[in-house]
Image 1 (cartoon, rainbow, N blue to C red):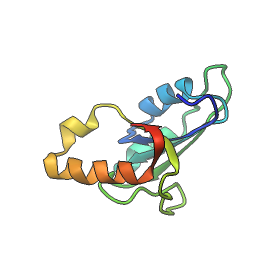
Image 2: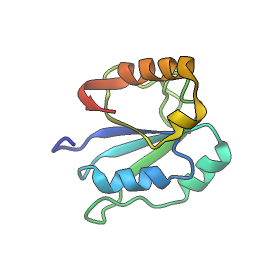
Image 3: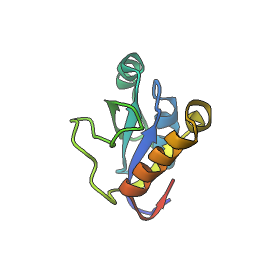
Image 4: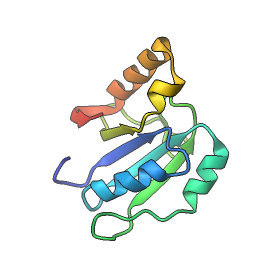
Amino acid sequence: MPGRPCRAVDLCSGVGDSAEVLARCLPAGSEILGLEYNPEFVSKALVRSYRGPAGQAVDVRFHVQSVLETFRDDAGDRLPDASVDVVNCCGARAINFDAGALDVLAAEISRVLREGGLA
């Protein structure tokens, strides 16, 4: 992990469990964007609190969308190229996507990930 605040995207974030774990692992001042297809899951994720390793609040936002589309922020704006330090996905890719969909997902991850980023 970078030794500075970073920007992370949590794919298929569900009700926020993986974002909660990610928040505890990232340096203070980091921000997380959760992308989730199910709006009911996002509603549940939005009411949770997310804390960093020292107990500080972490900026976690969510956007309802398929991860097979262009990644967008919580305002619906396209994430800029090479703007993300960490892309996290906890198992959903192997369960939900065929090889063609994985190619689409990998291309979008490559687009947003900074050089030296972690996916």
